[in-house]
Amino acid sequence: MKGEKAKRVAAEILNTSKKKVWVDPEEAEALKDAITREDIRELIKNGTIKKSKLPSQSKARARLLKEKKRRGRKHGPGKKKTTEKNRSEKKKTWIKNVRAQRKRLRELRAKNKQSVEKAGYSKLYRMIKGNYFRGKRYLESYVKEEGAGK
Image 1 (cartoon, one colour):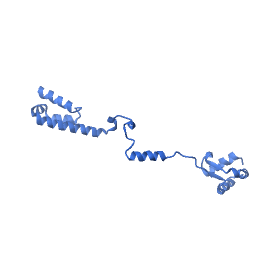
Image 2 (cartoon, rainbow, N blue to C red):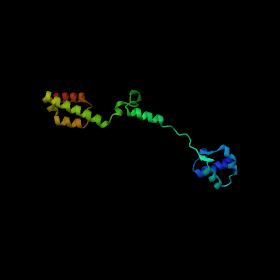
Image 3 (cartoon, helix red, strand yellow):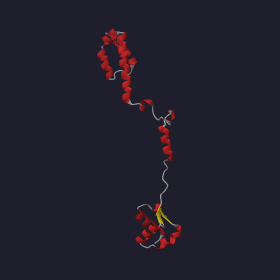
Image 4 (cartoon, one colour):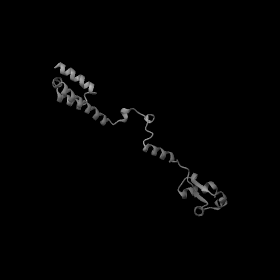
């Protein structure tokens, strides 16, 4: 059998591609004598034909990088691809904002009870919950306007 055809048959038997079939160069004559699939199987058994492993991508660098990240490295400003706003959890940001506004509302009520009561404490509290105000400053300006207006 010709070399290429023998390689193809060997690849089918070994269940691999022709690229991965290795033939011993010293035993090339035995390959020419092989006529049937059974002869090829015999050559595989003898070790004249083998299935070789092609070099795969090494994971050594990936493992090293993973170890460094586990230790807390590689997280500096140069590695950050997006803004802090997009990296932070939306819910946690909202909770932080709401808690700050509620605390400020309590402080305003303690300091200037009449203006907060005119604006309506429970109404303001619900407005905070409904995400009406952007921040503490907006809350304060709203209380000032509503308190003076009524």
